[in-house]
Length: 378
Image (cartoon, rainbow, N blue to C red; front, side, top):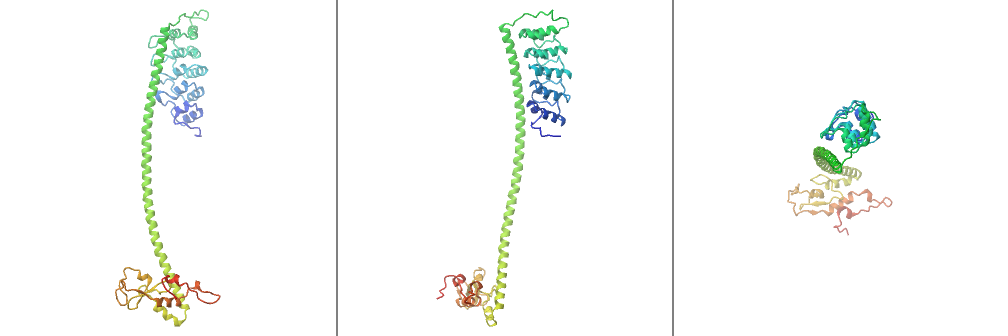
């Protein structure tokens, strides 16, 4: 089933906007045609009140209860009769065809024929009379339709009521000659206005009730949405904290592994350098080994020594836990000094390949970049 035409929030709104295709789709979709809305009115009440002929015909296809009345006792037939115009007559005919009660009375005792008199719906009155509507039913004030037509100066309907009477022929009809006094007409209008005002008040009260219900539903819905959002936010915060911790662990692991690999690379480079150097120079390598880390003190590492001349590389010197010389056990705090001779020996033993001038074969060493600019090489 194509639901693309469904745009309204319920069946009543679809009828109010005269969306015939949507009404038909909703009813085929098993929506109850007799659903009660504001003031006890159904979709058929609304369609009849708005003179929507096609919508009324669509609703009647699904067998609604045409006898249902709203809170003021109005049936769909009452609604159609309270309007005037060609559409009203067609709707009245359709409602009568499916068995609408032609003599049902509303809250004020008025029948559909009374309503036709009030709205001056001549065509509707004709159809009601042809369907056998009673002309002798009194409203709550004891007024029959013909007397109401006289009071409201509805001469055409007054003539129609008398003409349809089987006992009175058209040629024998003598209209009742009576005109309303100003006070009677004012009283009738005041009464009608009071009735309309009461209808409007009741309708507004029902609308307020509907809005209050909608307000409560809206509050609950947004409360649930806020609660769900808060839970998702808490989960997101927990995930952010976890990711930040994971990132910190990765950074520590990265530094540790990089330092380890750099030391491994440096050790392998030293091994290559030692294997390449002449045998007579290999004894120098053993002299340059740090007794703490066992690495060779080659540029750019600085070489430090204790008062007894035992060397320590610049990396191990910075270790706070190293307080005494590992060989002579002398206290190192404030007693270490640079071993310039061994640094120079290391520089000459381990010549960096990127500083070698291949054209001349001369070695050009940037000494300051190795050991710092605090050494006077001249």
